Length: 329
Image 1 (cartoon, rainbow, N blue to C red):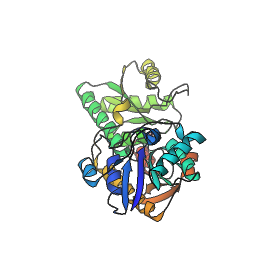
Image 2 (image 1 turned 180 degrees about the vertical axis):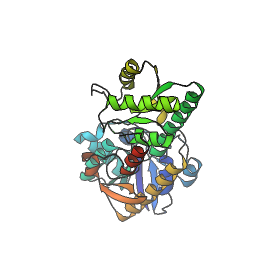
Image 3 (image 1 turned 90 degrees about the vertical axis):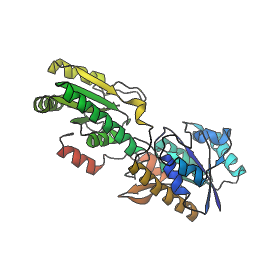
Image 4 (image 1 turned 45 degrees about the vertical axis):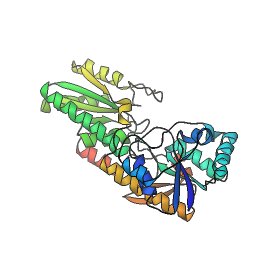
């Protein structure tokens, strides 16, 4: 029996409980969780994760592992404390669920003697080497639901312009996925400079043909190119520029933190279980210093150094679909 510790690190994401379900299909693993991410390893006691506990919460947005952000892995003293605490409790493996920064922390621990693996967990789906990150499908579905509701109110009150601001940081994966799923009219992405002429043309075209225009904007998109991580409201400046030319008020919806949680939808549950099963298999093999992701639905191993040093491009299939739908140019 292998004694394994697991934490979540960074922002929360629906579907993490399903990852645990995947882990516990493997009877060679004894799984223990710490609340509070890397800091929690040093400041709290672990607790045993059981099949019964996980089964009862497999799709709920109330995560069995509370997450946190931490700088502890980025100092020699912090890493030493984490490793000491884990080895003191006889853990032979640490599984970290999180994004790029969490992956870097996990890699640093691995290089100093603590076996670590990464589960890609972020609604932004911006992690290199995997098509899927835990929480992405549910967040896309939430954005799509917001777009569908706006479509209905736009039919009830015609000639409206709606701008929806999504999360995503410097990556447009989430905004693009939400726009496709919800059937938005246009989406503004960090990967593509804002072209006001094209945006105005699309707005005029949609208002004329369907009586409304719904545009999504990733949170980091600003006309002046400046954005502070965590700051919301980038859409207002773009909307004001639209209003001046079209003489039509823009209605704003900043989805913010409502995108993070919620009960996981089926596709997130299935993909998260796949990853959990694959990680458990790698633990038994003794694999370390890699992330387990999914490419075309199949588990892949990605060196942790690639996770935090390489940039993920927009998913090619989504770009193709969006171009056909005239959501992007």
